[in-house]
Figure 1 (tube, rainbow, N blue to C red):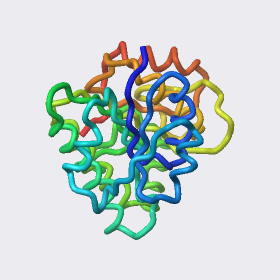
Figure 2 (cartoon, rainbow, N blue to C red; figure 1 turned 120 degrees about the horizontal axis):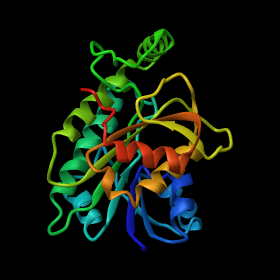
Figure 3 (spheres, helix red, strand yellow; figure 1 turned 135 degrees about the horizontal axis):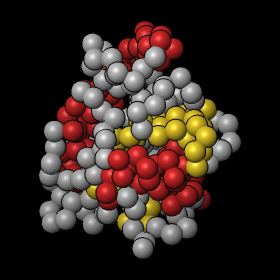
Length: 243
């Protein structure tokens, strides 16, 4: 069934891939912060919406979300602008989107949010991590400490909300290699990268998975067909956000 979808952070690498997957069957709007991207979005058969996570008020996002079935949040500062901008986009921008969904009158759209694997309380090391996972986690947390912190604060905020349905997808390190159509999904080891193509495909599959509401789902490169792996994780019903 065709759905009305809006993607926040529409010009990101994963978002553009997701747009290509969605537009043949669904009506897609793409939130971008500059007119420079409008033609590229239209060429993908999506409708550009000019809004800024940093500067536009919550009310403008609420208006954009009215009548939509699903909101994808796949935005981020991308390490540009230091910790201050990372906080404004990855945390405050995300919370702005959460608040805007809550402000929608009538049926509220579902939210599918792209976070990152290993987003957690640094003191709470997951029981399934091995020594390689722990070493990888330490390296990442040293290299992009602000990003991991503010993603964690955003996810903590989201998991407490119950006025709309949400799902969090938590990919591992991203690559631009062609997608394999395979993955490891759920509480898995965190050292393998995953193609942006495969992350976009997982996001497309989540569009029809209302039964994934309330779950945070880890995904890295693996050997199981993507749809099968995602289905098994959703049916298991075990969130990968451990607080």
